[in-house]
Image (cartoon, rainbow over all chains, first blue to last red; front, side, top):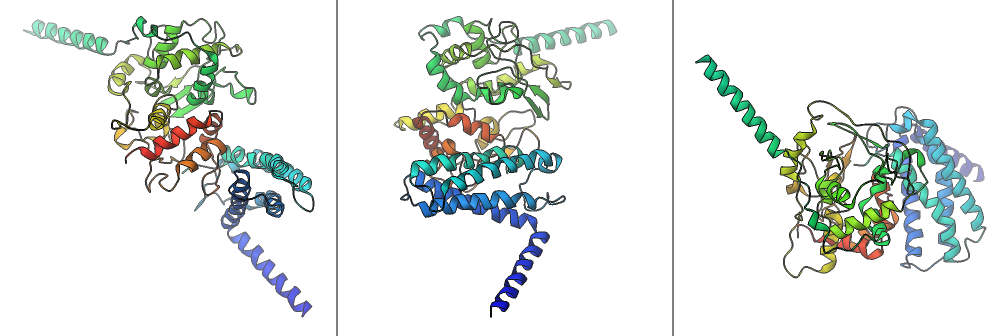
Length: 148
Length: 300
């Protein structure tokens, strides 16, 4: 049974990897949507639309960290066309783009670490951790995404 | 006979030249406009400075992170050529340190330089023309409080015939007006009118969010409906309260976007709007709420 499960997950994982290679645009969009949903939860708590919950805060911070580590791998050469708003500047200045991602990774990692195992103790603590991470959304989109 | 014809042609050309010269003559403000307003207040001016987004174009690009250094140098590449934002720091030679208040008011409200030349409308004076003289004086006082920056920005790189600045006088006759774009009935709430002032005047939102015709004039019949970006790729989104714009955004959503840079879907602001949103975030909340109220009220 255990072996079957392992086999199954290996098969599923390789399917995921295959589709990632075939359609990097879809993968990076899904990663960005995960970020957006986390930003939505974070914002709802910061605006008082939802009670503060450390588990939700932790889920948001963990998502930002995971996305920061993975999203940069889904901008291969040639993935600048089709249903994408990725700016051609990404491929004109790949080093600058990767630097943006590295900065995002650093802040997301720091926030995730500060959150500890239980998540940030209160809203003020969460806010101080998440705001530097959220600032990367527009700093990257200012240069590397087209508006339309 | 031939001589007569030549004479007549010459006379016609001269008359046409005179008419052009008269029609394109810069028309500065009357000195009396300053009367009845108070001396500029830099504290109020700072609020207008952020509403007007002055730094988005005039901040020295190399001075990123250093606030308030308005050395200019940003290049706007358009179909008409490359416009370079000038130094508007209070440096006496390279900036506007030697300007009088009338010089500044004429630049903002009439698009005329202290030497009496027309500015290119890449400088959005067609919007600023709707501003109150008091607010213009306040901005000037605030600009004077910023650090002087040495060095002039490059000159514009424009192709003929747009190099003939005099022709802008004709263009201004078509497009320069202090009248509001949207008229509201009597009894319209005060915050909607304040929002109209901020959006149509200092905020100059229509300069990007309204499509332009082939001579660069705004198509006011399509006010804020979005259109091709003046610079390079892409489109500028419409911000009218309908399905082509941001009809599904509430007033609160609009105000929150201007404050935080997040859309209701938690997509983030991007492109040239990032700098605009950062300025809007510096305004008092009531100003963002007024802008939101106006954007929901137009076309209703």
